[in-house]
Image (cartoon, rainbow, N blue to C red):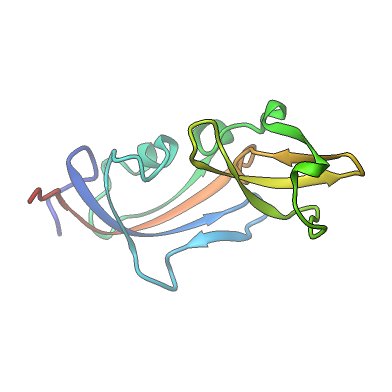
Length: 148
């Protein structure tokens, strides 16, 4: 049994499963390597970190994470209308995820929501925006972060 508990300055190794409201699994480490991260390093949204704070080796939990603590509410202003002729080729389809350059030159994924002869509507919201998620965890190890 570890004397360490999840909190700032701790390295956490855990298995997690992320589910939608209907119970369908959208991400899980169960069938692969567990996730290891430094608590507070930004790998997990704060809404996922706060419920696991204080857990230790062997602890399990299931937490309901509302949209405002997960990936935010769906923002209609993040749906943008782009001229059809700024896309190359005919292979556009609704539901297609494409990569766009953002203002800083980085990549921003967008989902095509509708297409007509002159415009394409692209949704730049996070795919999980507006969703209430269930975050199930099994803590495998908690230890102080070692800096080299």
